[in-house]
Image (cartoon, rainbow, N blue to C red):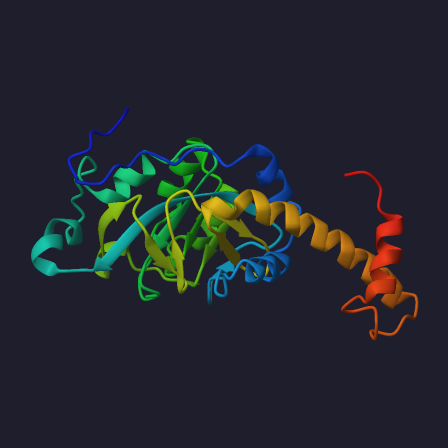
Length: 251
């Protein structure tokens, strides 16, 4: 069933990430990506205080955004009583529109004193093909969300339901999450350190440079492990770079 849109936002997911770039992003660390993004002038791509609820699950996907503002009792009375209109609630609209490769990014204003989403809605997103979920708030039903199997990142866990603190206002508009600006369609990469946001127009170039940087750093690490001094090796001088280039095969 497709939920009709009665709001002034368009809940349609963004186009898929380029396949080759997505594959490359799945092979590199968030640490590498922050270094590469710095070369493009992006200084704060890493979400603060956002961590995986289960380590070892890699996240790569495109942003599908959901924004919360603070609860207001005159607007949220029915929700506080457990009555939802699934046809007009932006959270529910978002859940029913995410598609393959989407990462739901929830702007919760870094408020952690209530859940932002629970395991039933996360299960629905998994069935729809979502690639993961990220919030700078808390998860409710954290064990249940972990069991769903999607990569999931949050700033905490809390048993209280969303409507005790948050009011959903729109989807697929720019949001802030963990102190980082996120636009619909931006790439998100997550590992055990946390989550990095890559502006959509930089995805192809960043992915290629990140692969090259990690290849070079493996060469440097091997030299350091074999007893080389960091002087001239890290960062590499002309001789080290020449030695590295001599070891490279075709791309």
